Length: 143
Image (cartoon, one colour):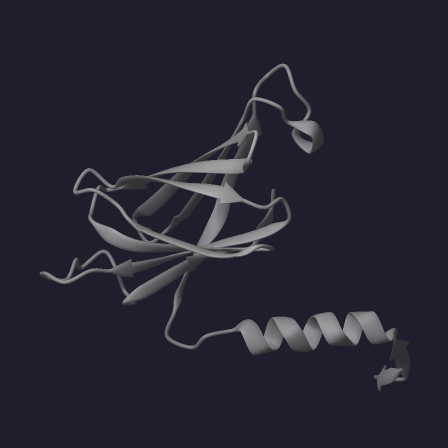
């Protein structure tokens, strides 16, 4: 057990805190969770058709549509304003990579249920002043 200010933290809490600290990446921007909605007929915890998640920061918005398929979850991404970027999705089963079109769209899958983070990296070409960092990550979300 770890003691902090006279209080004892359970080992799993300490491990999670240290893991989160190790995950931080100076110089990487963060898109914060802005919206999380499911098909109106389905509770979020048990969505069966479609879940829509949106992240936003600094004039950027990433909309993610999550749908189920027999092989796992499928993600359809839309970056606003549109721009071609490199996308990496980190999930329980590993990583998937793709590039968005000039219209800011791409699809990825299958993705495992569990915690997911999406990283966006500017590709070659002129820098976009709306991007204050060369890489921007979303907050972790559980799918």
